[in-house]
Length: 380
Image (cartoon, rainbow, N blue to C red; front, side, top):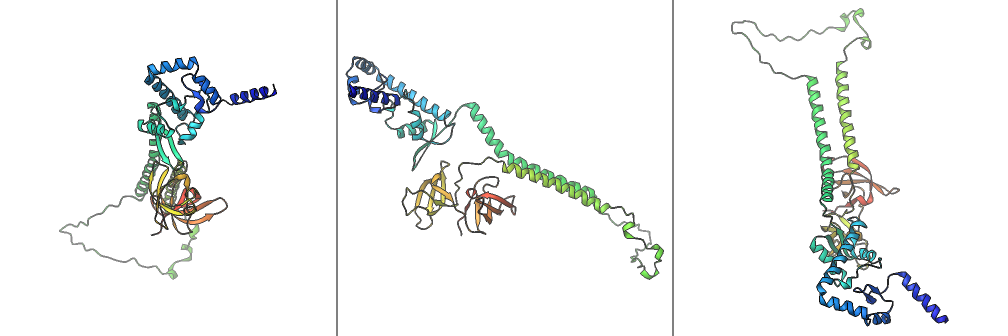
């Protein structure tokens, strides 16, 4: 009696867990058996035999229905749970099978998860890419409203910087036009003289006045003379125009800093370090140059020492910080894609100070750029 009580308690504990072995599950009857003996008894039952007869009459119908249900539930999980983010296919599958009433893959047309992921990629439902960690999937939302919003966001992000640059150029042109208008237009004149006129052109220098002959009463304090300060007015006007331009540039700079950061930082032509130990000690912490980028997060690299070429995921790489004075490429943020010179390393807050070497912002000094936003460029 004691053994029976303990075995019953153990059986109820297993049943409470919900998930059990897949090979003891009957999809047609939607019944989960606890062990091999229970599954054998179920297959010999009359109810199971009736379900098999129904399946034999129209096997394609049931197989297509199970496959469609499995696909819909898996894709719905990618859409709602991960919201279109790139995720490992097996990780999403593990969350999917947490539901004890899910459709099992052995009852569908796909034998393995890899085959299922490849099929989703060919159908254009997801974007599938293979790495050393396995298959990764990204859900493609084909809803017209969603695609319209995404295209609008991309267009706004691209046009925002161009709009700021155009506004800056317009303001500078206006400032130049205003300064030239204040100075007055320069008009060239032609010397005209009547034919019958006998006047002669005489060039005479003004007579210099000796300081000794000037009476003391005529001397005045220069500081007390009421001379119209026209020159200072022009300088002040120019200064106001320059301050307005500086304010516009400051607003443009603030808009660039608010630019959305990207998850993918790998870029062709930079030096990176391999940080994965899965390849062995010979490759761990080795430096390489990225020769090509594929599927956003994948990179083809060439080792600097041996020249061997590998395909690695972004998670297996990290940026390389060179010595002060060397060239780097900015990978993320407001100045993404610009070449800069490393001026200082801020060890306390893991950031750097740079001087932009290319583009419209050439010569600008930038502070507080994180380590992960820059990487070394290969030396010639």
